[in-house]
Image (cartoon, rainbow, N blue to C red; front, side, top):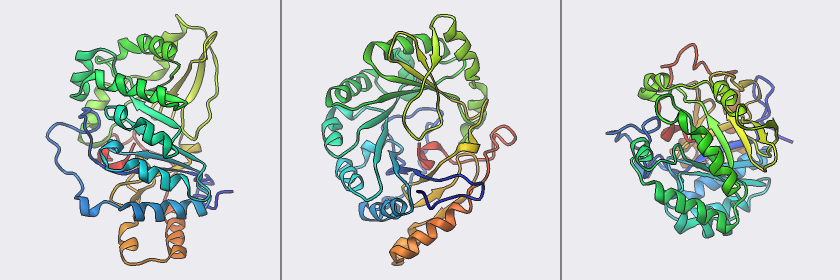
Length: 326
């Protein structure tokens, strides 16, 4: 039973752990061109510090940990960290978000380290369009996906940010791709974060329109999917494909929010759409005890706001997703 209950009665049993703010792609809605404000490596939490924090969260009832970034696979020796976290008391669900560019090299080691579930960002299946969105090569991502499938990860969830005028015409193609390869698919609405916020507003697509479009071709029935995330699922009848809709703007899910984010520099962010945060790194480096660390985390949870204000204040949050953690 979680001992982390926020002021609004929500049980916090899920932490998204960012191990780096660096990335080997440059998705325009996440990390704009020319951005150089990365955290200095000496400010990164060490693996020992990360293990202490996650151990404390586990002792307080947190069961789920998702390793994110930036791109987590640019952090050296990540499979070794995964193995350390997987063995911690109370942690029974360890997953990874990645762009899959480096999965070909790391898939087997990550699986051996205890990771079983993957979320993979893939916004287009068109080579030219993928390069325009990310600056990278689609072939590397597809190769990484197939390596992950061969290694035994399940489920493998494809995350597609649907953007007006960019890739909204590919939603059916992505459904076909996921049916073919036995992947789960999640569509995500753009969020106004960082200085790209106005751009995100220009490309925003209400996922209710996507759902309506898909129902014209596919027989969609209610579906469920294990996990701690916010997606609402439908299933394509006659297949194993589940399609999740993550709708922070059109149908926010703040009332059921069960998560916090730990950035690479040890900052706990309590909400994607607010600036509420708590700094753990100074406490760790000043020798805080394990009991003191748990007390600090419990205090941090009291700062968690009731909801985001993306609709009311779209330019309020000026940090980038690569900083906050996915």
